[in-house]
Length: 369
Ligand SMILES: NC(=O)c1ccc[n+]([C@@H]2O[C@H](COP(=O)([O-])OP(=O)(O)OC[C@H]3O[C@@H](n4cnc5c(N)ncnc54)[C@H](O)[C@@H]3O)[C@@H](O)[C@H]2O)c1
Ligand SMILES: [Zn+2]
Image 1 (tube, rainbow, N blue to C red):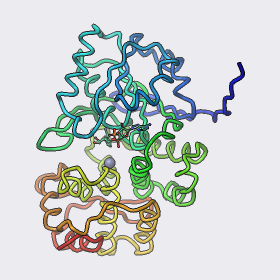
Image 2 (image 1 turned 120 degrees about the vertical axis):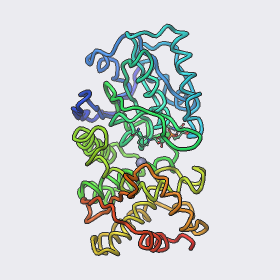
Image 3 (image 1 turned 180 degrees about the vertical axis):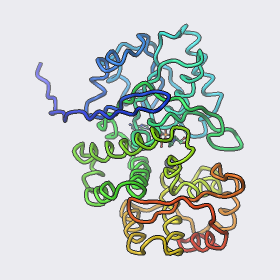
Image 4 (image 1 turned 60 degrees about the vertical axis):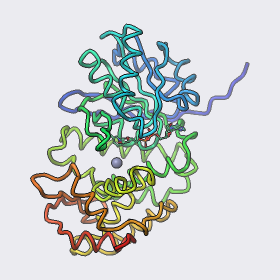
């Protein structure tokens, strides 16, 4: 029988030599079909357990199962509200029942929720077994699969329980994004804009210029933006694995973003959407201080608006958002650390942001008093 295989682009391989582990991030269309030799090449232990969600497994599991010999898949729910210890417990249960040992590899197939939970299981089961991330959302491909942060939420706060545990490999296939709902796809794009705004004017301009092809999920448009985002994240986490310094710039847009998520009880926004607003707040703050040209603030606002509508914020009070910021993990010794853009592709971290200027920036982007 004849079958048609579209011509694959050559995969891009990035090296991420963090202090605790060096690993490769391989990006290529059709990588899911080619993962077997790659796992053998890195010496991933032979018993391979995939952890996924029922939906992602149904969409992409068979393709993975054809490419590599797998144990019985471990399927757990992947909504943010399931990102908790009891779900990780279910992963442990399945591993124990299957007598998983140190000769085992966990492959995560899913978005950031699956990657964070199954990554935490890999970090802790038998004090650590091999971990390979196969991220299936844009957010996971450009952000959560790289850098080694794994963990779960506590009922009283997001990501309060976790570890730094670098994967042994990351395998990215942009073709899996073809099934991703548009809103999830856009949520990932805001994080791509974050890399552009903090670290690369070239990436920023590429997203603006190729927006249509990116939304059409054209592999030719997606490959370079995913590769550049991963390059930036890989470089930053290699320089500062445990977020003592430069890695903090990746929190750009996240201080106000997290507060927006918290005041709406994590129900209104996709994380990336809240970061979209958070970047606008930071840009307003920077402009008001004279640290950012209004032209650059406008370019950021235009790009964010061009991706489509964000959930409303006019009913959210600036006071409640300010209050939520007081609980932020980025508070060090009582001072809120804020990442401010200074140009497209450049940032500064400040710790002297005062409440009135924050309030003014929140009002500017459209929150209530
Ligand atoms: N570890 C890190 O460094 C890091 C960084 C950023 C975010 N995160 C975490 O990532 C999580 C968010 O990740 P996310 O945005 O990927 O959300 P997610 O994992 O909840 O996935 C979003 C939705 O997309 C579905 N999905 C996944 N892949 C799909 C595909 N190919 N086709 C169709 N549907 C698909 C999922 O089933 C889910 O419903 C948060 O918990 C956040 O804390 C972690
Ligand atoms: Zn984020």
